[in-house]
Image (cartoon, rainbow, N blue to C red; front, side):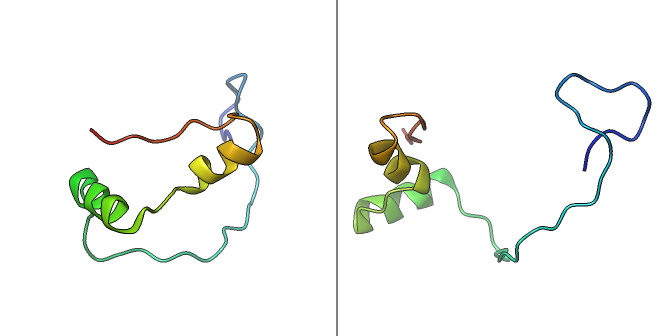
Length: 65
């Protein structure tokens, strides 16, 4: 992770090794429409939406239209 070349952007830090927590990746894509159906059926709230309640709106909620 980071910038390998000598021309570092202000947001970029020097190249370094990072660990990535395990995660799952689906074999199939989920469209925004499919995700919206899931949200409608289950009243699911994203982590950002849940944290927004606790952290006084610091996180933006994701809306699908």
